[in-house]
Image (cartoon, rainbow, N blue to C red; front, side, top):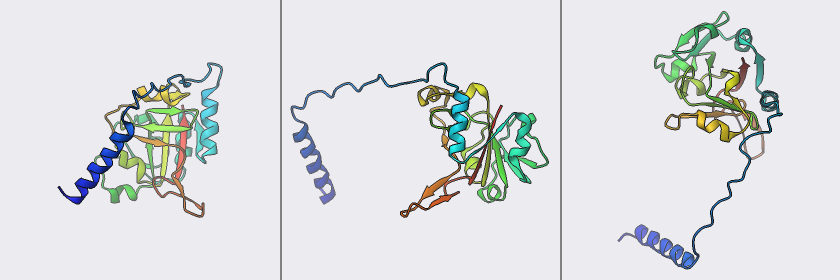
Length: 199
């Protein structure tokens, strides 16, 4: 037996001795809130959170062109609805574009799987009109379209809407991180700019 295996066995033996006679673990509480009160305007709450996270919010299909701004090359999922391709940009359907190709794109335009009002989180699971995960992480500007039926109050309501077997991306505002001195830097782990179009 190696030194590493002996150390592992010793740690496990200590844990077993500590737990000896401890009994069964109690059932965890399940009475937490799973939805908001019906009179809460979840769309207004979502917008409030998105704006707080420095995302830009637009309303209606015709605002997609404004959300894309001056983007000239826009990558889109191959199954993106044709009526969403608005504006003067050149739309490039993703057919397995390389990371270098994606990096040359000015923006990405996708749909989403769900949007959680209480946390301001947009959720993607590579489903319809979302494309593969890489296209939403490499370009510096992400424009995401959210349909009314995709907006829910709490995470517990959103989880059943997602494909549990697919890669998921949960977005709460533009990509940002802080260093040890709490200096905020945007665009480190994904798009620096997030525009959300509510239909």
